[in-house]
Length: 331
Ligand code: SF4
Image (tube, rainbow, N blue to C red):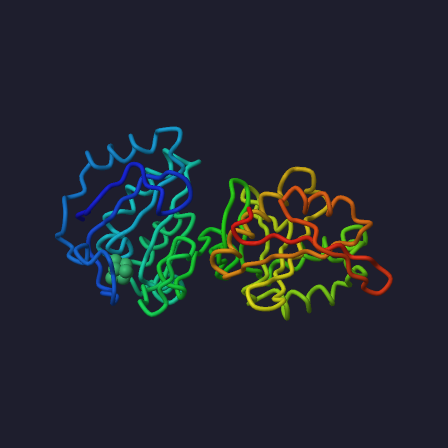
């Protein structure tokens, strides 16, 4: 296998400062590809033991957050074969660094089916990757504001949870300790821990039954572009959720809840700040607001700590709701 470039201080491909390897060879030939020279499998230099050592030396620096594998396409069958042993060594040597990879192929229909390369090799390579950005680049869907992908058809997939849960787990954003991701059918138990709890639901609405939770999950949460689950990276547990309800052009009402056993650890702040960044960039939001019951002092304090500004009071039923707002650029 040949490679075109190694970057030892890359801040554009994945979170934090990373070492990135651009392998050569790609048969996708997407229109508008900005790496066309790397389509040629002979482009660049041969990948040798010396190259591997240089990458390992780069990764051993404490400020390096992880490794990014790009192309070309690392999932071309011959590249899979050339990469798999190296990637397994990398994972064993640097278990705490995250690994991101990009492919023009489709996770389910090309990679999981074994259509691209040897199924066993492909699975071994997938198991070395934390986050996979999949799908061809589509010029007409190009958007520079997207989270580490070029066009909106491409998906950011959490590989391990997807393999474990046997359903594609799409990531929205990540923080040091959390993933923000789309909802899954398997979230029902964790969601019920929150929606079925009277204390958590005190200022929202009456606690939900198991059936109502399942209905809410399937009809409102799953498949929505405005509803996100908060997952703890360490355990895979869904510990909270964030909903953005459209209010008008570029305006959303925000609602966030965190499992009561996971409060006072900074998770809500971490998740909401990340979700706000996502809303202001990828969702095109200009104004985010939250309507909070005046008796809910912890939520009011939380909104103020996020930099949201009080604007007005409204009466809904017997409750007085205070509206707090944050606008784009007013961070
Ligand atoms: S998969 Fe990536 S490298 Fe290959 S043609 Fe598409 S954009 Fe270019």
